[in-house]
Length: 352
Image (tube, rainbow, N blue to C red; front, side):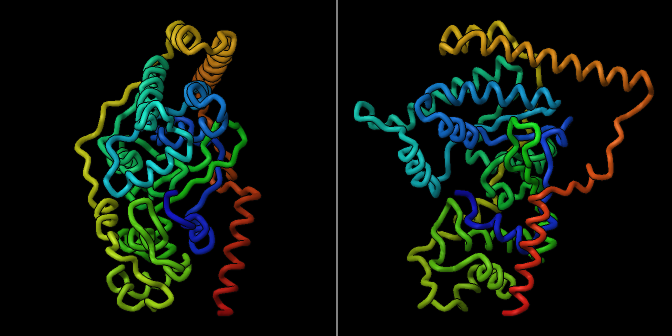
C-alpha cells in the first residue's frame, strides 16, 4: 500500500518536486531496487506462471538496465517489523500463496523464489542485498549513505524513511515515463520538517498502523501544518467526525520511520553475465526455452558493443555528450497535466 494518497497530495501541493524522465536519463547511475515489489509485479503480470514469471521478468528487466549503463542493486526483504506482518500475510494470501498441503506455503513459496532470484542475479553479475528488516527502509539507508544515487520502488514509504530520490515506473520500456520524486523539494514546498512529514504520512495511512477514519489528505496536511505533531492533532480534531483508533500504535510507526538503524554500507561490485551458467540454470533447471535466453543475450552483447564503440569514438574525437536544454527541463504531457491539476487545486483552495 505504501502511503495512502501521498502521490496525489504531492501532485497538487508540491508539483515542482516531481520530474518526468525516461530510463536513459539514469545512465551511469547506481539504483537500489525494491526486489519484493518487482517480484510481485512479475507474478501479477502472468498469474498462470507464478513459479517462473519472477525469474524471467527479472532476467529481461536487469539486462535492460545494464544496456542503459545503469548499475542496479536489488534489495530483498529481511525480517519484517511486527507492525507489518499482518499486512504482509494478507498480501500473500491475496496473491494465492496458500495450499491445503502446507499451512505455511506462503512463506515457503516466497522463500524458494527469493533464493532463485538471488541465484539468477549472481549469474548475471549483479549485486543484491538481504535487508536486515524492511526492504524499503534499507533502500533509503543505501541512498542516505551514498551507496546508491536513487531508489526505484512503487511504494512511497521510501520518502518517509528519508530516501531523497524516489523513482516510480522505472521499467524496460525505452520511452516509458519515469516519475522522479525529490524529498527535499517536497519538504520545501509543503513547508514541513522530516518529522512533520512522517506524522503526515501516518495520518494519511501507512503499512505500520491504523489511521484516523475519514481524515483526507488535504485535511491531514492542514492539521499537521497547524498543530505540527500527531499528539497535538488528536487533541484538536473533532473526535465525533474523526474517531481516534483504539490503542493507536502511531508512535511505533513513527519510530520505525525515524530510527531504523543500519550499520555500514555493503561492498557493491558488478561483473559480466555468465551466459552458459544462465542457460544451464534457466533452461536446464527452470525449463525456459533456450532460444529466448540466447537471443536476448546476443542482443545484449550487440547493444553493449555499440555503446562502447560510441563512447570510444566520442573519446577519440575529444567530445563529451552534450545534453540539450530539454534534458534538464523535460516537459511531458503528464507533467503538463500535473501543472494544470496543481493550478486547479490552488484555485479551489483560494475559493474555500
